[in-house]
Length: 190
Image (cartoon, rainbow, N blue to C red; front, side, top):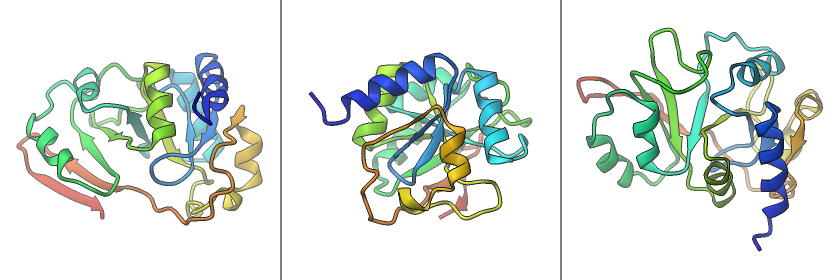
């Protein structure tokens, strides 16, 4: 049994009920919910005191899953992803199958394939994409370790993952790249 199996079970129960979780990812700690549940996504926007016009990232477990949530993915992205070592979020055009408030007004959606053992297992077991937005109130810097997370955020979620709370290695947010319809790339955050 994996050391974080109980955390996974509890997270899935909360996610299935439309609740919010606070969990470690391949980058920084994130606030998560079912990315197909509009009310759950709205709860994150409220908790973060963030405008719903600002995008949030969703996590997927495998590259092939992108095909379920993007209408016309450029297949060259799969080659590009294989060559990347740093966690990178891609903004795709034509987001589908997700909560309407996770897809931006221009139809784009931000997706990262997680390489972290915990978050990958969580997404696979949940069988749906999970929102992953930094565990901070909008306008404040993202926390680099668990103990930096604001009490308001901790009190605003339905479950806090125990796994990796004691990790003191500072983490950084992912790079963000927009994959344009013409196949060109726009670097948004390196």
